[in-house]
Image (cartoon, rainbow, N blue to C red; front, side, top):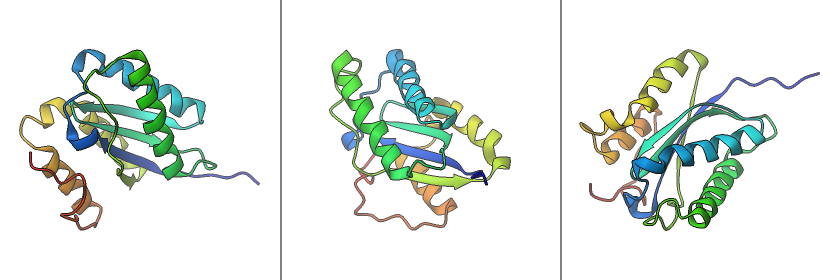
Length: 152
């Protein structure tokens, strides 16, 4: 009997202290690196995007992959790659925590557009406002002590 899953994850994680280290000129290189990691682990990446201080990834996970392990691997390997390749000189590391929100297949197109338009989106909305909305939409209550809650 085969294992079947249909879970789409919207992952969000930020640079340490939300430093605006992810310059636009090299972000696509970072995204290609992360896509390669997901592909090697038999995860399907639908979209990746972000701005100077955080990344959004829309992906499915292979049934043998634990979400927390995948996020840890993505952060660790991308940090090593960023520093080794000197891609973002101001980057120190990723924040420890992350957001992971599950979605159904009918949400995929809307989420792809949302992630694709991050730069435009953040002209009107701060990261804090965005993250709080994601939490509330998922039925979660933001914790003011959370590392992601620095003033914008």
